[in-house]
Every structure is written in C-alpha cells, then in structure tokens.
Image (cartoon, rainbow, N blue to C red; front, side, top):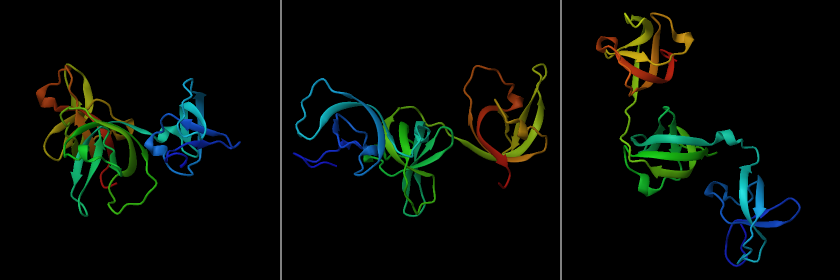
Length: 223
C-alpha cells in the first residue's frame, strides 16, 4: 500500500520500479503480497499520485497460488443454523463454500448467484464448507435447484425395449437413474450415499423406471 497523495495499492517490482495499475482485484489488495504479473504501459499517462508508471494489468497471480485454485460457478446462498448461524454458498456441483466477505446485498436464503472466489487461508469455528474470499458475485434470478441427498442400493434396471442401466433404489422408495455413473459403483446390491440433481431433459424415461438424475457425489455408505 502506497500513501503518496492518498492511500492506494501499487506494485513494486524486484528491480525497484513502481507501477500503478488502473484496477487491482480486492483479492490482491494485501500489503506485502508477493505476485507475478504482466502489464502494459497505459497510453493515458495521467497518474495523480506521482508515484509510479501507470499500467493496465494483463495478468496478476499470487506467488505460490496456481490459477486452478480459483472457483467459478453458479450456486445457492443458504442460511446454515450452526454455531451462531451464518450464510454459505452451495455450488451446483454440491461443493460448500463459506465466503468471508459476503455483502449484505446477497444475504438471502435461497438466492441464486453466479460467483468466483479464491480459497481464503484462514481458520473458522464453523466447520462447514471451504472458506473463500469472493472476487465477484451476482444474482442470477434463477429458481433454486433442490439437491437430492440420499442413500440406497445400486440395482440393474431393465428398460425393455430401451435396454438396461444401473440405477439406485433410494431409501425414500424412489428409483433414481443416473445419466452417468462411475464404473466402480456399477455393482448390484452395493449400498451407497449420493448427492444428485434432477435432470431436466426431453429424453423420455418410463415413469416406472424412476427419476433421471445427474450424480454430484457418490460414496460407499458410511464413508
């Protein structure tokens, strides 16, 4: 953080040069953060701080952090009634994220959002989800897609004249037909835990053959 003519964040290169980016993502606004970067000198050279060379950032990455750690996707804001209560985000793939900088605008149970974030290297007492620092978050206006969290037995389903497929006979009495299933779980009688979402498709599945779903997670029961 520089304090020349007001406080702002700039970059001091290893050769001592000073650069003033037009904009730095809040995730990188940490005094002393080590980064690698690529930048282009700005044609419009107005720099009110008189501190360094104005630049436009092309790439900015924290040293030791791989770009694959960034999380992007859609999800649903959910109130979690643990400890003193808090709000988290359940992504559409079933992953749980605990934002440490969730704006009051998005504190609404069931709100559908699109978000991007980086893991936050902090400890929390909630023991729920992965702590993250949000980079962007917007409301999508889509209805929430309820997840199916269930246990049941894997079984072979004969769908004459359609052939056959493996499904899961849920403990709730409903037969679930995964669009795809890992070969390791294609064993009749195997008892599993699974998280899934209903697939909305024009594909006709006979009513007595269950509900077509997309598996988000599947494990042996009790693991």
